[in-house]
Length: 100
Image: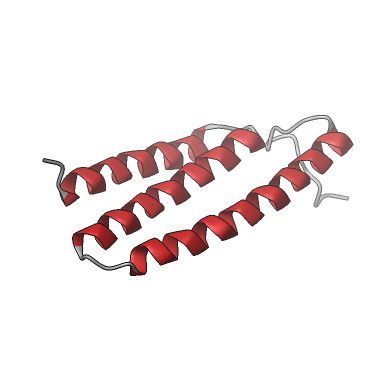
């Protein structure tokens, strides 16, 4: 039998992998994917608590989070593509757009 604890532990592991990926990696695409991994980890927690409490509130909230995440992906990837066209790299250490 899978309990709430199993889901929370899995969500914590996925979130930790995402945080480590953001801290260690330097590619903007990989960092972006790790942020999405963290969002999905939180969504898993919402779904687990929603099922545990027999309420649809968590599932509705996940629907809105996924909608916002889809829009974020579109805008984020467009920005990454524009940076790649201008700088020919997606390495965050080499991108210095704010400098004169």
